[in-house]
Image (cartoon, rainbow, N blue to C red; front, side, top):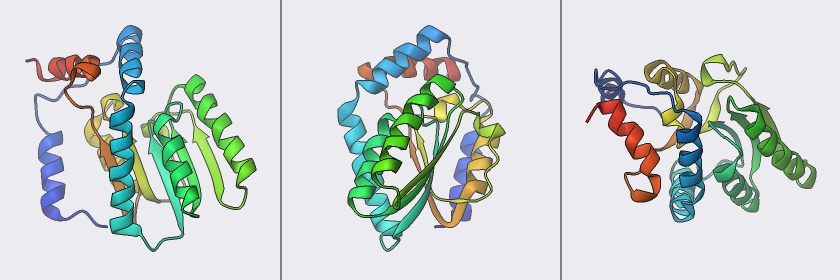
Length: 196
C-alpha cells in the first residue's frame, strides 16, 4: 500500500511541529514506562487484533511475510503476533531492531525456540542497534512500530527511513501510547515534549 500525498503531507506537518522535541528518558523513567507497558495486556490484545485486521484487509492473500519490528525490545508484542501468524500457516522472516542488547537476547532466545519448532516457516534476525544504524538489504511487507515512537532520536529522519524500508505493497503498523493512568510515565514525557 502506498502512502498518498495527503498522508505524506500530514506526516510532514506533524513531524515539522516546532513544539515537538525529543526528551531522553532516564533509567527510572524507562523502567516505569516498561512496567506500565507490560501491564497493559488489554491494550496489547486490542493492538494485536487491530494489526491482524489491517493485515487481513491489505495483505490477506500473502502466504509469507517479511516483518521488521522497530523497537522490538524483549518481544512482548511480537511473540503473540508472530505466533498468531504461524497459527494461520504463514511463513515469516522476522527482523527485530532494538539498541538494548540485554532485551535483544530475550527475543533472540524466544525466536530461536520458535525457529527450531517451525524451521520451514520461521526465520529471524535480531539487530541490537538504533534504527539510524540499521542497514537491511531488503524492504519489508510489514513494519511494526509498537510503542517505539518515544525512542526515536530524530523523529523526522526515522520516519523517512521507515518509509524507505516499506515494500511497495507493505504496511506500517504504528501504536502510540494512550493518555491513561496506566501509561502515566509516557504521558509525562509527552507533556515535557510539548512543554504544557
